[in-house]
Image 1 (tube, each protein chain N blue to C red):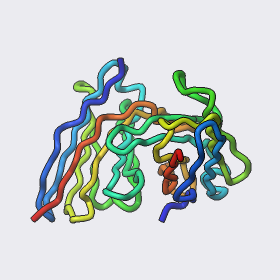
Image 2: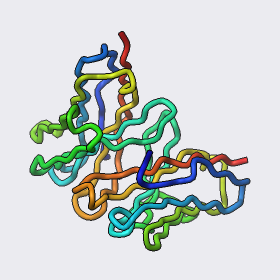
Image 3: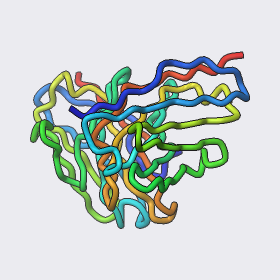
Length: 120
Length: 111
């Protein structure tokens, strides 16, 4: 079955960079996109960006585009999200999720989430 | 502050029908499909509705979606206690050049 397995919880200091990985299985990685979405405590879902598993095209939310980098390794069916210059308000659960290319994102499978704590 | 506007909360009693609205603009809901997600805190979100009104397999037909102009709605009929969750609408926004928007979310309470 389709699974997205994310890396474990991270504790980082302000100003540091965090990398979260997302290993996909059970489907053809190159046929779908991977989205990154986060939820801070007490806040709603917030879209950060996506990458095409096929051609590596990517798009970032304007809010994060100077700090986020999304990459993928098709041979390993794995996507990565790097968030740099971490701030206290970046503390959140970060989700990767599978989406469809085209006119409907239809994000139909989600990872388990990775808790990122920012603490000095 | 999200560009897709949802009421922060909604409630209903078991068996009731509840509707959650999502208001946007021409560049997002007006020109693109709307998806809906159910999120129970501490778990992964779940796709409930795609392409405005399509249900993935396994989603009960108590859940239905609709869209008109720059607004969309999610209706939940025969409300059950397990429906208590946060609900989010989402759509591409053409003015943001291929970026996705989520609504602010609606917390549904089953009384």
